[in-house]
Image (cartoon, rainbow, N blue to C red; front, side):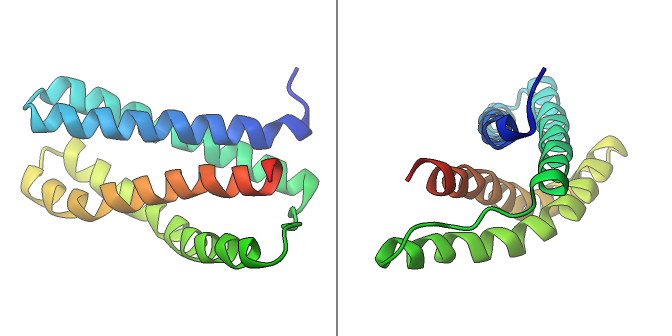
Length: 138
């Protein structure tokens, strides 16, 4: 059984898996391996959905975790955190729209929005890992 206190580590792990799947999915489409691309991106979406569920459960039970660092590292933390939060709010609708166009085989629209979705999604995933590391391992 996973305890509530374990969920931040679970969340960071899910973010790491999502990041890897996004990168592999991008590499697969560049190599024109459409099936592998589709499978990686759907898996990244599912893993990110698991992350979001776990994240909401954790914060429902534990509330927010204050950053304990001081000095210059505190400024770095907030410089990473603030854009992370803003872009995290955007990524779910962007990912849903991107996935919708792909599943409807509207690939021109899919490609157009995916050029925005992928870098934002990667940024949110990677900065999520960084925020976790700064909160729990500094």
